[in-house]
Image (cartoon, rainbow, N blue to C red):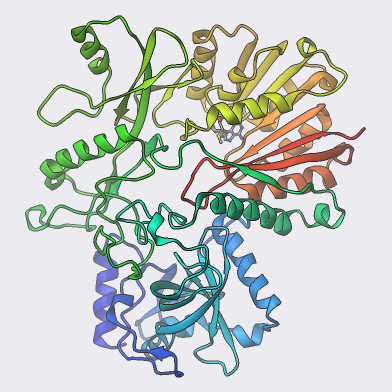
Length: 588
Ligand SMILES: C[S@@+](CC[C@H](N)C(=O)[O-])C[C@H]1O[C@@H](n2cnc3c(N)ncnc32)[C@H](O)[C@@H]1O
């Protein structure tokens, strides 16, 4: 191993990042369109192990991360495979000996190269461009490459900085020919183009909604193959827009890194405080935030106004105290909305605003705050920003108040919640049943959002949740909103139906699981319980598609259900994320 690699090995040990791809030294001139690479390909994380060979020298070994096929990496592998298959590229024509590559500087220099005039083929469900490029070693062979911020149909220049056995990762350097979808005048943030938070700021909003509809379509294409082949899937409905397309996010978590191990805090400048960078692209000249893996971000275009005020406070405080920190960390910014009576005088109002912990204007006792109209007469909503993960915060949806611990789950685009909760409420109904006879089970209920918002006209509601804190808040929230027909139980959704005595023919079930989806035991029980209606809400449409494929094909009563509709709700404008709601009912 040459000295430059040993130097990198040293960096691996010292750095706060666990794994580094070594610096490549030589320019790679493989074909007419390949241009010299540069040193900025160094220092990128890659999942690999360092082992020693017989002579005691360090050897790099690629280790495949554990992944669920429905998480972003798993889905990307399916998308890459499909791209190869569609283009008739055999396994031999795309093979990469990754362990050889990781241990050879010459090979790395061939792979980590700059390429001009790359044609982008597809958009991944994570919102990145996907292209085929010539294989650096195999004649007539190809590599697939993921290029964040590039869109299908575009011709772009890229820098490849990391190789996996299946695909490569690249930075977008220049857009030579933009697609119709790209309108850079729409960009609303000085960090867009580098920050990992947003993917679609330069895409017109209605087009974003259509892209997300396609993401749902693709998810069912990959994970519900049998249902698709049997024509058992409805057409994916148009995505429901968010009323707010910027300044909607009620939770942000800016973070910072510090070098690992011993260092002299007096020696370092204030570390960047912000959000992760998506590689080191240069396509947008005016982009700010620096060139580190964490960008220095002063405000976030999708965060609410009060969170941005708080971000500025917390940055000021961080400037004063970062030298006392010994390791990296995260700052929690969570909006806290309380209803304030309008008849308070100035002093009482100030007391009300400041009485709960919040982000304070430096050197004062005053919380930053915003005001918003309330749906109830005689009151105004006061929004402050909580930074303590253990604090209890409130959210207000159509006059109903929800309290929960700041570090627990709560939907974080409140502008769309009245629309979503109404949609769920309307779709819980089923034929041949008077509304007052109906029952509702809310599996994965959190602090009771759907139970409470859907409790009107239902005889009884039972929510189940694995987090003890959330159950306690769900019960408190029911009391707070004077809801008498809801109870919440602690337990895994997998065992929920053991304790539910509702008549199944008169019951609707809401499932709103975490990203990984429902377990098979839960779906098996759900089928056995045999409710009249199922509303499956999901923040990962891939696990939703997998679960419905399993539920309908592999459970006792699954085949008696039809999927009435599948529709996306845009909880996260400007990003690739999409919430999907599938409605299932018993076939007639
Ligand atoms: C996506 S959140 C939905 C919460 C709620 N429906 C809402 O909208 O506020 C998923 C919830 O499922 C809970 N959870 C995770 N695994 C669970 C399990 N096995 N059984 C029951 N609840 C679970 C989490 O604590 C979290 O509150």
